[in-house]
Length: 274
Length: 320
Image (cartoon, rainbow over the protein chains, first blue to last red):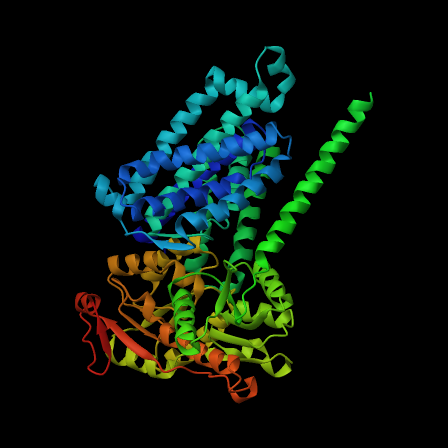
């Protein structure tokens, strides 16, 4: 029922969503700030790729540049939240709203990117590029969370007073974590633009919801930072692929998606309880 | 003690004054002393086809009107809420003499805020969804509904197909209406239909891959979501060696076999002719009937046709 082509799409899309899920984990679970900027950063990453390609700048720069751009945006949200004391959801919303106009000014509402430009450049297929980036990011984040910097980030989220009592500033660690998370989200956006061959101002719709569901599905299996996060992101793509291959009345696609996720999560939760 | 009380209060007052000043400045900037007619353009979203309507409309109005005309363009970015606020802002602007609405949702927004200005619409596929007969507004315009029967006959004649996947957005009213019609035509021609829904652009890669494996041909109605994500669909159809047929000449590219659509440039120009007739007072809205169907212009992409082994019929246009 699911062919090689569909499988390839599941892996690529699941990998991109997996990156955003990692970012969502860092914000929601490590520093406990639910950050809406992730969706804006994703879009900014795609927009940056479109801008770079159209300015014929070297492609190899696109991925690191988008990471740093996303990081910069994360710092912006962090400063709004920590320095001006604006609520985290509101500062994320403001940042995303700002980005919408920035993206429009930078590339417009829509831009076409020559398809398969990145696989040509690296001479390896797109799913492999996504997987490589995913493995790299996963490795770096896993190491980071075990390091003293990572531990300080976790502590800043759970008990900022303790971090303060050690003479450290919890705001610094929160902003650093936001920067990393948004950098990863922008990187995912860049990969998405390379993969689909287009950039659209509304292309990020549903990404954050997907990432949060991935995070929550993953959390059912393991609450810590683990490969289950990626499984959660991948599971949604598999569910979606199965639904569209089933060829039911498309009106019910999204409802079916919700029901399948409920069944999946509820099923594993009862197992845990027993 | 007093300073502690006064400082935050002062701060708030200062902020309030700054905000009020900003609002006034914006208001002042918006009230220009332009004497000629101002046309408000509401775009549902921005993509190649709709942009072509807009640019050709502007150019043609300037050419035909002779005297200076000003355009206020606002883009709803596909966001219904945003479209409503643009429409209500435009409708309250008394210096605006005409509204030009591009694509269904922009027109719906302008109709629902009961804009007092005459409305000219363009690139609406099926005008029946606008419920114009119940509306008191002065509306006219051009539809981009193509002669589907002719286009589908041409496809069934020249492209060997058994199962056809229709890729569309189930949340797009006019797209769904078009899917119903073309399903009827394809079934009448003895083809099997698979419906593949793509609700948001980011779903397209997966939907495209599934469509390629489930059918031996892909057909897309006029649909804004598909139009934005056409690159990835074309790429996958090319890889799978499957004919992809669209209803918009602007979407014709490598990987797309053929397009049967209207010329959006002509659509924009037609809108401009009505606009200028209204501005000069030569005609009233009642004298300008809604054009429900536009002639289909079938274009084949030659390299894609050669790769798929499709013989291009003699009576169509070619490109590539």
